Amino acid sequence: MSNDSTLLILRCAGSAFLLLFLLTVCVVLWRDYRGAAAQIEASRRTHGRLVQLQDVGGRMVAMQRTYSLLPLTSIGRSPTNTIPIDEPFASSEHALIALRDGTWWLEDRDSRNGTLLNDVPVRQPVIVTDGDMIGIGSLKFRIDLEF
Image (tube, rainbow, N blue to C red; front, side):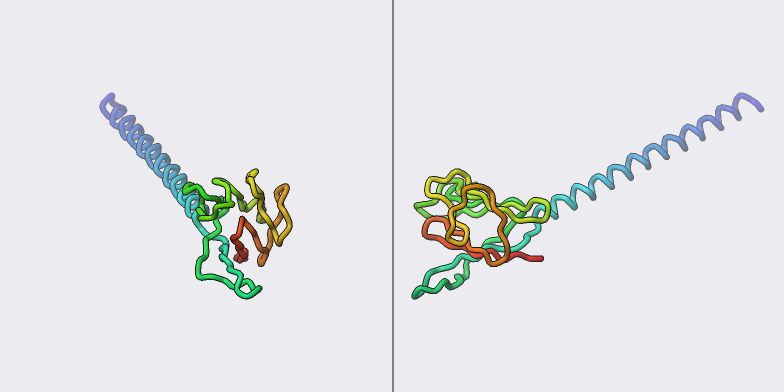
């Protein structure tokens, strides 16, 4: 076998190795992209909603105003919250609803006037379920969860 044939075989083997390496990099990048896209989509998926309620003649009636629940939903006066509310008795970062290990939790964010869950003050993070009522100032919300 001559030197020219050996060099040709080595060049072909090197080219094949380089193409295999580039194909492997492309496959890894594609899988990483798909995984990141799936995570972003999952974080944007709503898992239920908060329905704003109004007292009409001593009875709580659902208003047309609803808010989507995300895995991490913040409520307060600040426009940076997931659900900004116009309530003078609400703090800028008043409450947080979070999905942790398949369970929904409500916590008060050290608000001045407190958060109520079914008319009971929230002192530490508590589990919430479908149909629970959250009170912030004069506003009331019903939790409608999707299962």
